[in-house]
Length: 298
Ligand SMILES: O=C(O)CCC(=O)C(=O)O
Ligand SMILES: [Fe+2]
Image (cartoon, rainbow, N blue to C red; front, side):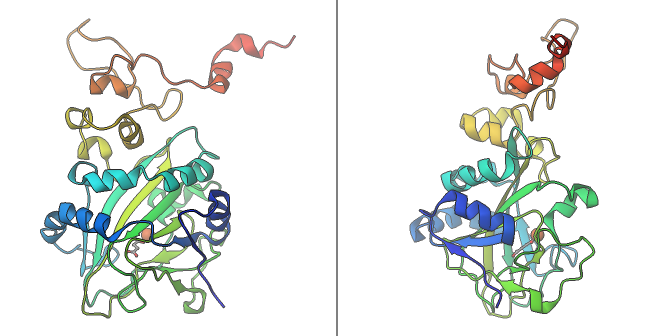
């Protein structure tokens, strides 16, 4: 019988990582208190309520999707930096990159009557090019209970290695039921989709996702959180949203201006008014590769 593994916030990160790798999806139960979720809802509900329904069948015509949450919600900023999730990102994503980054923040509200979303892999956002790496770690924080009837996410447990052309059968799908304050974790490679909301209430989840530092982010964080606003965020968050080098050579810029007005070739931190921003967070390996002398055989 199909089963989604459930963990506690105190479970071993290695065990959670192994489940994420093999099954592609799992639930960590009851991480957030009701009080935390209430505060988060107070911050974000006004934005959610004024969001119109999405306009296509994939995003959901009875679904609202509300983004830009780095600036809109302090509690969302806390969740982006949640210690359990970031420790898992360290183990799960650093296999394929030197730094990972925030991919998107989005409140997904399935209204009553919303049909099930087509089954897909989130890594298809980049097309079919990434079957050889795991590009993504995803969370959906339950801001309401997620039940079979209100549209708990449908997932093909164990599907990360299936061929892209696999046509997923109903018998391969199970729903990620969880209570408010729990989090559904899934990879970029697992087949999944939002469920059908056959209840009378909204199903609300906060989707926060992370990706490799050398890939393009789904939500353009530099436009959602421009430098003049990003400069007041905590350093860890600035780094996660992209105001840091992706790895050696990825993400530098030259400030615009008259000849000689600004220095050349700065790291993104410079745009936040930081004095740092002159070196490119090179790793030892990168330096070796960059210096031809290190390739001379002794
Ligand atoms: O809302 C959900 O349960 C999943 C949504 C999803 O997979 C997506 O929009 O890519
Ligand atoms: Fe998805």
